[in-house]
Amino acid sequence: MLKPLYIVIVGGGNIGYYLSKALLSQGHEVLIIERDIRTCERLEDELGSCSMRGDGCETAVLTEAGLNRANVLIATTSHDEDNLASCQVAKHRFKVPRTIALVNNPINEKIFKKLGIDATISVTNTILEHVEQEIPAHSLIHLLTMSGQMEEVVEMTINRESPAVGKSIAHLRLPADTTIALLMREGERPRIPGVDAVLKENDRVIVLTTLDSERNLEKALIG
Amino acid sequence: MPGTEAIKQNKSNIVIMGCGRVGGKLAAMFDAAGHKVTVVDLDAYSFRRLPPTFSGTALIGDGTDEDMLRKAGIENANAFIALTQGDNRNVMAAQIAKHIFEVPRVICRIYDPLRKDIYEQLGLESISPTEVFADLLFQRLSQKI
Image (cartoon, rainbow over all chains, first blue to last red):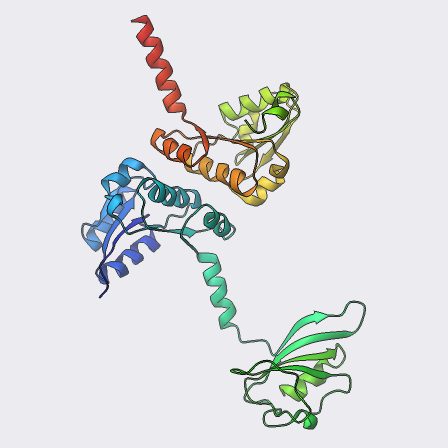
């Protein structure tokens, strides 16, 4: 195991609690600073004596918490301004090497980084990224529409069921006004495919087509 | 001091965050002196502190929100003053004004003297009313006794 760290967590809410539990089980030394006495008592009952009552932005409280020997401070309250202040005080007054702030309003992520916080975690953005990954990839993604014309550039991914798998471009029943402009295959450089290029599963193609031909293009490449 | 020229000429843009007793009073003073004043507060009720003659703008909103500050005209402001009840809110808004919008003159109220020292070291012009008032009382009492 790595050298155990002394980690101070500001805020004993859900995130602070589960975070402490995980870090404790990894063998780290953890101290939670929490303002509310009831929450403190509950933390004490569940995790043993690893919490302290107080305002995690106050120098006196942080001194008592032994912040000058802390390796990491993580601010997890639901107030961005408090998380910012805790991290800044920790960094500039106690020279804590690594400060991490929870960001509730995603717009603040950029601001916090500019103000010197080492790492920010935006709950909203994290969830958003997962949602985007979970949604099945769109078969046809619009990349560009030529203004004033009917022409457009789209991206498509060849899946396993596609009727195009194993066929050369010459043998695809592509609409007349449609051209496969670029072929992207994993491990290879993107290239302009010739008519004899054979498509494989997971190939991505950039296609020049028209709005009217979109449906027939989808039929030919995706089925 | 940067921003002082425009303030001296009584035609600067001033954004005040927090319309409490101090914020309201300061807004009224700058307004009466002919400046263009915008006050931002979360609570519309706090605007009752502005005098009937107030000709500036009062906006309901969160001064730690970048978009809100933009609405308040922070991009053209000569001065920004953070006067809410929360030290951390003041500090955050003042830093956004100074480092993101590069407002020439930014002043921040921080009640906690220890936190004030830290932010002063970080280059944020700050005033601790706690310190100022305690000093004042101490001096007065020392003279009279």
